[in-house]
Amino acid sequence: MNDLFNSFMKGPDENGRFGDFGGRFVSETLMPLILRLEAEYEKAKTDDSFWAEMNDLWTHYVGRPSPMYFAQRMTEHLGGAKIYFKRDELNHTGAHKINNVLGQILLARRMGKTRIIAETGAGQHGVATATVCAKFGLKCVVYMGAHDVERQSPNVFRMKLLGAEVVPVTSGRGTLKDAMNDALRDWVTNVRDTFYCIGTVAGPHPYPAMVRDFQSIIGKEAKEQLAEQEGRLPDTLIAAIGGGSNAMGLFFPFLDDKSVNIIGVEAGGKGVNAKMEHCASLTGGRPGVLHGNRTYLLQDDDGQILEGFSISAGLDYPGIGPEHAWLHDIGRAQYVSITDTEALEAFQLSCALEGIIPALEPSHALAHVMKIAPDLPSDHIICMNMCGRGDKDIFTVAKHLGWDMTGAG
Image (cartoon, rainbow, N blue to C red):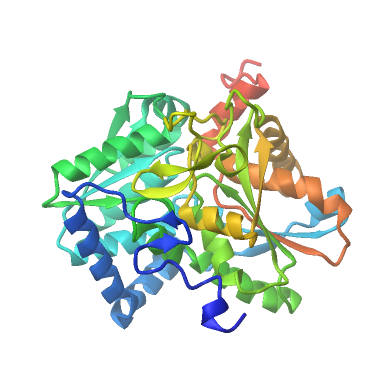
C-alpha cells in the first residue's frame, strides 16, 4: 500500500470528494469564504511556522501526547484481547475536540477574523471553542440545540464562564443538526468578520479533510506509542462515531496498514429499526446531501432529514462524515451500532474496573469492545479511543439509572 495511487490516505480529490461522497454544496454567498479558507489551509499545511505553533500549543496548552493506557482490569475481566485506551479525555477541556479547534482558530487569526461561531451537541466542541477564543481574545458564539442545552447543562455553564454566548436553538428537535443549521445561517449573514469553526469531519470541503488532518495527531501518537509499548501495530482500532472526527483522527494514520482492522461505532439508540430511534446513518440510512456535503443520512422516502435519537448528545446527528461513508462503501472500515442500554453498561464498567468515568460517546465504543474482546486471542491488541470524559454526562446517566443526585437517596 505504499503506492500513493493505491493509498487509502490520498483523498479528497480536487473537488473535495471521497469517491461519491463529500463535495461542496453551499450557497453562492458562502463560496468565496470556503475558497479563501481552502487557500489559507493549503498555505498553512506547508508552513513550518504554523505547525510549530500548533505543536507548541498541543504540548503546553492541551497536554499532548495523551497517554496510551493498558486497561489491565478490563482486559482480565473480559478475557481474550489485550485492551488499550488512547486517553484523549485527558486533554485540556476533557475531549479530543480541542485538537481541531486550535488549528481552525489559528487559521481564523491568519485570515483576520475576530468573531468565531461554532455548533455543539454534547458541548465539548463548544467548550473547546470558547476556551481557545478566551485564550486569544476572540468573540465566541456557540449554537446549541435547546434539548442539548438542557441535558448538557454542565458544559453550558463552562462555555458561559469562558465568555461565550450560548444560543439555544429551538427549531427541529433542538439537537446538533439544528444547531449546525443556525450556525450556517449566521455565517452567511456575517461574512466579513466571522469564522465558522466546525467540530466534526462533515460540512463542505475543505472541512472534512481539514478537521481530519488536525485530529490525526491522535492516530500518529497511537501508532508511535504502541510501537514503543508492544513493538507492533494494533490488530483492531475502535472509536465512536457521530460526525466522526475522533474516529477519523485515530483511523487515518492506519488506513494503509492492511493488517489493522478498523471499526466505527454508531449510536444505536433504542435499536436500529424502522422507527428511526437511533443515529446509525451507515447502518440505517442512505446517501443524500446535508450541511454542504454528500454522505449517508437518516431520511425519509422524500429525502427529508429525519431526527436521530441517542442518549449521547455528541452522537445525536443524522449523518456522518463523507470519508467514513467512503471507507464504509469500499470496505476498508466496518461500522456497527450500539444501543443506549449497552453504552450505559459500558459506562458503569469503566468506572468500576478502571476508575475512568467516560463520556457517553466513547462508552459506545467500549460497549463494542466488550462484545468482541472475549472471543479474541490474548495476543490480539485492541486500541480504543477514549475520546471524552464523563463529567458532562453524569446527570443524564443518573436520570437513566434512576439515581438520586440530591444526596438524599
